[in-house]
Amino acid sequence: MQMPDHRDIGERFAAAMNRLDRPAMLAVVTEDLVTDWPQSGERIVGFANFFAMLTNYPRRDGVPPSNDHQNVGSNPSAALKLVAPTYTLVAVEGAGNSGTFTVRVTYPDGSIWWAVNLYQLRNGKIAYTKSFFAPEYPAPEWRAKWVVSIPASGDRASKKQD
Image (cartoon, rainbow, N blue to C red; front, side):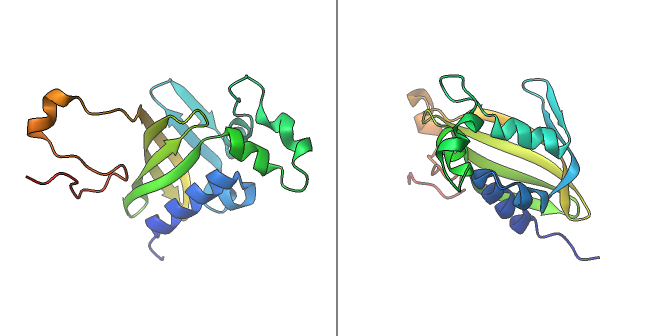
């Protein structure tokens, strides 16, 4: 059996999430996908529920973006892109059927969050994820003499040289 290409799976998953492309998502996740969000105590069971949650992401005024589909012509996902978060894959680590995606998430209000997604594959597709979220925030000055700055991409290289 061929070893999974974790980088490819992560890139395809992030791209499909940004486009809200159902067929592209199903190419990388199982129909019985289970997603856990421990911070909020939620579990999403099944791809259908996962995709429904994504496509009903509320706008700031509380109206689900799916109500905008009629105004977008032949590209209904265009309205969703305006109100749903966008995902930038920062890092992927994986071996065998387990791995980790680190993702930078930009929300419509401009806030930036980081997500660490632990995942398990079955037959080369994501079957289970556990995601942890944290907002991006400025480093406090009091730590400056003990730390170096890293770029927003999360790269290990330093911006600050001593």
